[in-house]
Length: 591
Image 1 (tube, one colour):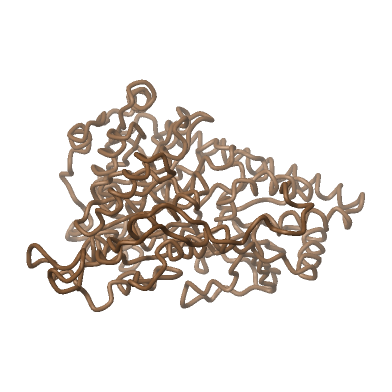
Image 2: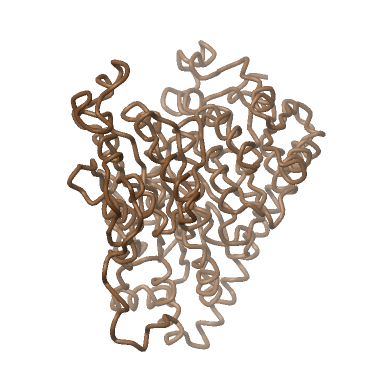
């Protein structure tokens, strides 16, 4: 309880005052006041203020975030996302002018769809005449080439808010403002350009409002009438489903959703695009990718893509409610999914309100129906898990190693202390084999830009140093992820994680998707999918060793488990990141 709850007056609304010699000091102070622990940093001549201001604050005994050097911006931004996902706290990144901003690459797309609070920054090339003011143009001619008409436009359509810091700005205020917007639902990335002259501008102390003083808006409460209608329909439904994807971004929703679903015997299915662990993966009511063809009532909690219209749609007479902090999905230009009710509210508020409402509606006969439905769901769930386990074991001796056998072995070696970052494609079914039940222990790439997992695993390990962090990815996405930079940082900062690479030397887009569009007799298939394979591949084990990590290639299915355990030993006992690259058949490979 707030210690001031009984007092009608606030202690003070006055802005804080902090020691600051320049705007760089003020910006670092504002980040510290907002609880920013880490700045994921890739060096640039105009962003040296980060280094100086952080070092000065630490030397003088003031709060300041820690700089984490990541030697590529793409891995750096993904690390910020992994840190925010596991910690629930905002993170900051720093990159060099327009070039470094472009190096963030596809991670900007991932940030935009992640629902995570990150402040992305890029230095701004100086524009002042040489010698005119501190921070003006000097040095080589590249400074002129780094000026663009609108640096922010590089990322603007993938951010909630952006600003180019100006000399007249209160620098501490603008950092607090950026963090306020990033942390306000729907959470997401914001972008700041920081010109060198502005960051070096001399001041005599700084005075600004903190992020908390500006106020992070609380999500809207769910409409009472909407909650009543959803509750009434769920209680009376014969074949209801809860669809999940992102509600688990708040780990507290997981036990709350379990209570609601057990109360009503609501089966839980995964939407078309999963992102966070929203329900225990081994719960009897969890049916993973269950068919919706017989559903009569569907509740979608924080779901962007509820189903695939060409393969798994519900019947036209199913009643659908979609709830989210932004249920119209305005970040996606074209959205054809219909709903009978769209409710603006965060998942926790919806779950708690529904639980309170349905308790008032349930009759003894309802409880009998629910018990029967729970039994049916448990039977389906148990059969699903038994069937996939038996299928995996039937492939135990296949050469090359079968991806389902690999997924089965991964699930067997992981324990409750693990956090998994899954960037595998759906056909590999890793998600279905896992036994994860604890909230916040499973994450999937929240968007469609590959290469998220190595950096995200680094950030996650910094957020949860006592956990074993495991990234699982295909080799195509692994290469997209600039992994050597994440591995170097993991070794340097004693934040080891393990990566398991599905090494099939194939792009699913250039093989499976070609077949789905052009058929199996396409010219591409006759050309052995030229453009779909990268064979022979990079030796990921040797690459890992070059970065100071443990690396191992696995080609025999009998050695999969022992290799995984050697990787776990490296991160647990030796403090080294590990890469276990498992050799699989190429996609569509002809026997």
